[in-house]
Amino acid sequence: MSEEKQNNEETVNKYTNSAENQKEQNETSKAGASYNDTNKNQTSNSETGKSEANNNAQNNKPEENKIEDPKTELQQKKEELEELTDRYKRVMAEFENYKKRAQKERESLYNMTLSDVIEAILPVMDNLENAAKAETQDESYKQGVQMVLKQLKDVLESKGVKEIPAVGETFDPSLHEAVSSVDDPNTESQKIVQEYRKGYKIGSRVIRHSMVVVAN
Image 1 (cartoon, rainbow, N blue to C red):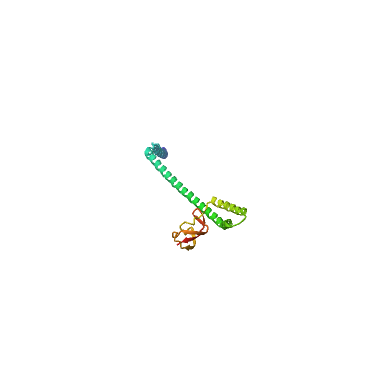
Image 2: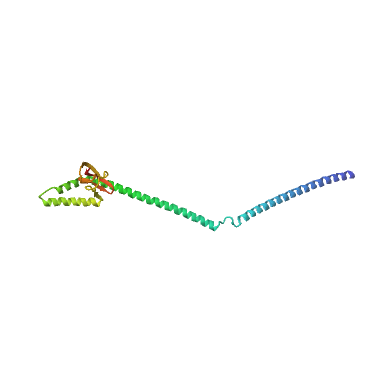
């Protein structure tokens, strides 16, 4: 009995020691795994810190390559200034040409409108001239007609209206209208010898052509 009891105790001790050894091995394994994880985290953090440090170092490098040569920059500014100056001159030239065209168009429109009005008045002037030439015993009446005629001529002259020269001038189809011709040995060919009706112009625009007689 004593020997059997002793054997049972030895068996229990074996199982107990085996369980304790297994527990110690598990704890050691866990500790090792924890240590490895800690080392991995430290290694990762270290690498991250090195990467950030490298980036900061690169960002903090002096921007030597970005600084341009002052002479090159000055040359670029000069070229830009020359280009802007050239554009300004072209715009101003175009604007001056526009003003000239607009002024010319206004003058042309003004002369056209004025010539239409004057053309309607010219028959009145023709009648006043004929009345002033008519023989009359009433000198006051004649002087009155002459005064009105002179006043009308002064108004037309103030607006740039001028008579077209006729008698003694060479016939010009752009200014004169030939209604007949005569043989006159004492007069050069194409010379105007008589005027039937006066012509008028404003500037270079003919309001009414002169009606004339031309020598052959």
